[in-house]
Image (cartoon, rainbow, N blue to C red; front, top):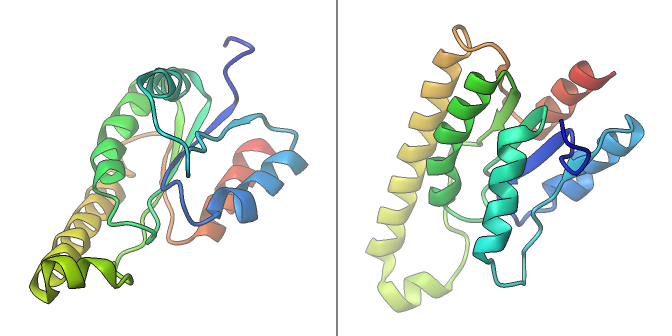
Length: 163
């Protein structure tokens, strides 16, 4: 593995501080290198995407957390392809997607109406449920795939892999 590729790639929802508050402190304790795509306020570029793709393809472990900060449709779509690639390359893949998404903001309802927000919640909820179910069922046949129920499960799995 190239030295420029970290051991762990931290992908998924950019907002919510799940990396900073829970995962990165543990990785630092374990002396494990990591990649944080971190573009909260910056404009995402294709160059950034190429770096993400390199890390996804070469890191030992991929962590993907799709939290409730957004509906997460992009991350949910990416999760399956990332997990498939990780399985084919022999990487570990840790996935956490909480179900029960509900839009908490106020702007969309004012612009698009309450029915739009209800439809968004329904689609996000169904998509999260289905991705979780597919991943949970795949765990029994895909080595290195770990579907965890909460962020503590992510941390526990990383400790098991790197302690």
